[in-house]
Length: 340
Image (cartoon, rainbow, N blue to C red; front, side):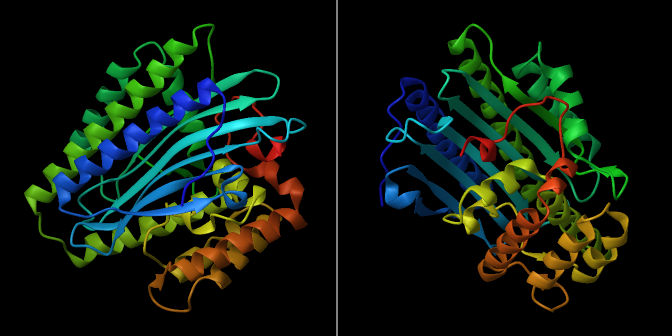
């Protein structure tokens, strides 16, 4: 399946960039773990308004769940839309071993009909078990890639990935530049590429080292990983603006949008957090729990992902005011949902 790409030269260059990052990251991960990433294509409105390809891996000896998504959505044939195009790489890798950290990386360019364009650049390391050396190495790679922006990106990321209900951050280090645009589009694109490459290559090296170390795994390690995976799902489905925006815009790529979710979570632990969230979010937690299979641990299957997507859409359509409770890095920019 193929899609019609955006006509904008800026969007074309952004698509070239994110496709290269996707291809090279998949190759690096395959070399590090032996896992095979299989492509799954999806189309927006039968390809007329774009689409994308997800490279997925999971249930292997080294990867619990892995998804490297590239997408491009545009409205070249609908000039009345506020959004002209959105081109993105979004990837999350959850390794099998609790001694290897998860990672989330996002690089995207949004173009508005007004002519304004901006980048969203994110990279965060998410270990189930603390590893100071790996965290320091990942952070230093990002600092070298973006020395002038690093401190602001760390501050934005720490705000965005804070989970108020649990009183903790999602990960160990968070880099987040929202609404990044200067008078030099070429320099902005180069920054996006440097951060994307620093994050992907450094993470692949960290994962390769963890696989080679083959540290023994205890029951306590596995329990900590399961609890962390549950926290990860909770943050993505109750706080992440990008995920919610994507689900509210359309239902043509629910499994891909929720490709960041780990394979199993603790349903009872998740349910226990309902009383910690502000109203009306307890209803959202209840709906998420109900969408998961009644098993211990609960498998996050593709069928469950579709049910989870419906739960999130239904909640925010019933409670649009609850969107104000979602995460923010402190930079106010319209979400893609506002540009429909």
